Picture (cartoon, rainbow, N blue to C red):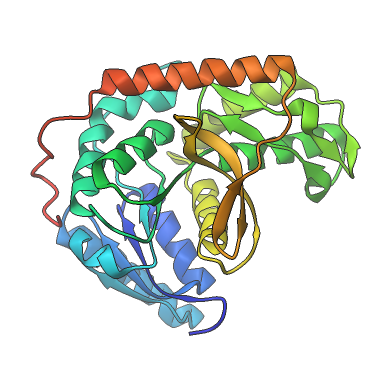
Length: 308
């Protein structure tokens, strides 16, 4: 095992996003073993066979293995990319459209991984609610939601294009909800260390329409979330230091905020907000709190997840 590697990472879910995440992790060499679990053993085994083919061609050091969810307890980290089968007909608040279908899946996983002490990254939407549901079901101490960091990456790319600047020169965050309640931290955004004049209307339009354009063209966003997972794992597992915008508990609510990781230990580093941004964040917190209360996290776990 190299200094830029951990022993084992687990992933639950072999759909479009799970496949992209698994492929990215095998290609990255971040771990010695990648344990794949899914709704059925056949799904997990099929993805592992495909990953093995790629591993042979690329000489990746990562060994993929088909396992049950219970086998992931010994992993350094577990990525939750499971999704129920449902049709999302929402025209607005699209990510919220999966809440009723995905909540039983996340509740079942939280029950199966109760007491797990490693790092959990939740990708399943609506990610802010599903992260909180997983935490409160499982009791796991290190759970983060992937969402606001993808929004932040899109923000930096968009602003770089609009201002004709390199994306690496843009420093700024999108926080709050991974969805319609996202808060663009324009007042603290800089380009080459200088406060930026952010064209908010254009930025918000791009953040609102970009996921739909990707999904319309290729069926689902997958590469972006996979990149966010890899970047976050490197920081959360202490392989590199840096900042990621992640869903976590903040002042009693669960929403996306920047976390600075040093040797794998996170510290909240929320930027200074102007009055409008502060009001937006408060409204988002209220929205997510109400949506979670309406979720009523109770009832039996689904019995269709045979890998549990």
